[in-house]
Image (cartoon, rainbow, N blue to C red):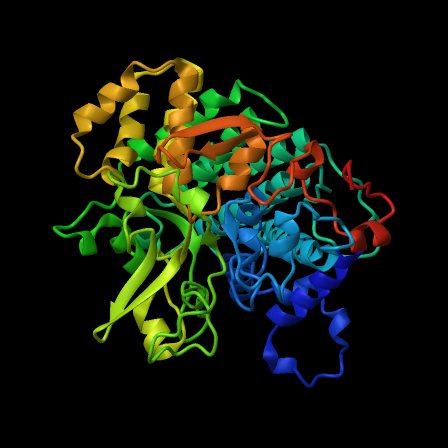
Length: 523
């Protein structure tokens, strides 16, 4: 936790005014009062949370290691990174050798990045209520947004590391900085309190994220809350009463009526998945990380083309397929009926340009393919969606089935997502196949749909963590998926999962600097 003091001091300096850049006052003496003594300073503090989102740079894919958020895909054994020879995290994840020393710098970046956002949120929550020159409505809105981001980052930390230090006040001195780990249940309680507070103020706007200036909406807060309750219902807490809470939170988004699934156009080139690829303004968008080609570009387009392929006119010095679904992952899809696994939908394995065909011999993410960035500017501009309405429907379907049974409502929500993918199958046929299933059979159909629909939303490892079940596809019958106990199962790279693999180790640097911390078992 000592590192948090340094991060906090640096963030104060970054966010402070440039007017006094040459002043003699040492930078480490900048006070919090100086930082947010004006409404503009307070707004800037909260606005900065949007760029960092879930830890600074967590979704950024610069370099050869892929984005930090991709680590779960590598841990699942179903995604590969062509750059893993130069950045080791992909390789050690597949080898299940994610020790605290081996990946100390990597995990320490996660830890510090998430706590930096939490620290800024804590500062806003302490000082904005007493600020003058700002309306009470604006104060409340900024406080609700700060609570959302504190909840989002603690949710990530508790999933990654289990028990973590729970800090809800700004770190403003060296006193009491050696904070012990707080049990997982208490961390979740704080997350829920933050989200309920943000929702209960009735200050967050209704409607989709992009229609509200890309600021946190009530739907975004309810979606995160639904996800939190769903995760709590599974391992390690197994608080199954929270399935009902997850269902209620997801229903709040659905019944508000502001969101909807993007629908297909007249051709496969105008499919819903290609619309999602090329737009940041649709009503399926619940919450995401914004990018701007001129200010803060998205580097994902450069990791959508395998390094061995070099199309003429490409504007990146080097490309690589940093989040490659291995062949076994493609078997999760019915390759005859499911549009998502057709070429140039969620993924692609070939494309044509200027009359020349390029065949990869492997699959690559197409959802992040931006032709203008790849061949013109070298700077991507599409957002990364952390939550989509499709996930809300899937959370609702699973949570309702677990808490109320396989009702027509649960079937309808799952059919919404599946029928869009099975675009040539009559919806009534899909609903009929789902209606007669047992609770467990139906829930497994939801898990399958999460694998397929959310393939590039980085959910696979969280699902394995909470269910303790590992998906196994069938080469002979693509689309058929079985779920087996993850502990004792091979990860497709010749390694076998043990219990301790389901949490990451605490960074070694944090253990060394904070004697109050204890390492996770097995590391």
